[in-house]
Length: 395
Image (cartoon, rainbow, N blue to C red; front, side, top):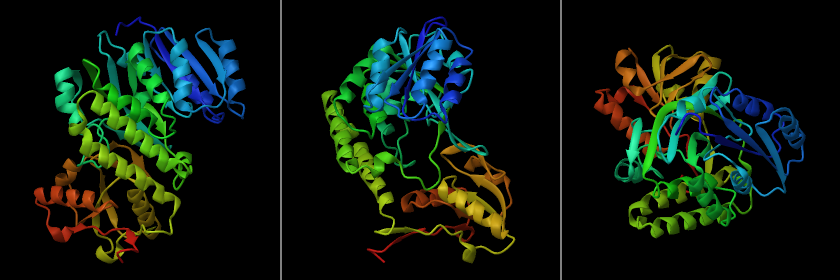
């Protein structure tokens, strides 16, 4: 991408007056130029629309369009259709970006897709870096198919996708993203919109650049909050729409059999998200630090930086039970919470400890972690884990 090539940044907006200024200001502060910013007000009922007009009147490189509430895909598509740049990227209106994002990403090459990493923002002292499990550099078509496609939609070690589908951490050639958005618009699902764009697109590009740096700050939902798209009565129907669309896309390019197992696991985990709406049926979340298995004042390494790991840290701070000497996670490699920084598991060997407490709810993932620890010559007696979900059907 040539350094002076116009970059169009699309910001779909719906009722985010609380965060919109920080979002737009972070784009205006970019060290890269030229850019155009297109604010798409998707039928907001708060003051977001007026704020968009304020920015458009004040800055020549900002334009605003107001549309009837139609969902994020239609909002993004409308922005891309009027964009003048040959390259397109997106920022969600409750997120923000580092000032050097586009200066660093818009390097002089002809890549059809540029991909970067992101930060998950939970609160001011808890920001997690989500890394891509790929080497930095250029991937030609053969390398995309060999190194990225086999685990992009579902990685069985990570138990999630390996190739982050978010459109906000990517820079697209306009014709590529425009074509994909037009197809996804017809599906009519408010779940999996990014996945339906990103994963099929990878089968149609000949050159991809991976940049192993995070510039994008993704605002996470508050603890315990269930996403509206999960609470939606049509959620399971929408998941099926996504599954059907992806399956057909993979068939169209002749890679369905390669993608079938990944797609099935993606579907199963997506459906399981609906359990969050029924906390008293099937599962009960009992996130209690395993005090009974750990001696008081012992030195503990905590493995797992998700919600469960945070709960364990909070509980130990309240009861001052043990000394947490290290916090590690193999997927979330940067971040901190309540004064504890997250490190890579490789540094475990540098620490003296009495126990490793695995703060992971998923049984199979916990087994994988145990296996990793055994390979590091850590004795079974020092590894503590127990499920925090009680399955009443099998109880």
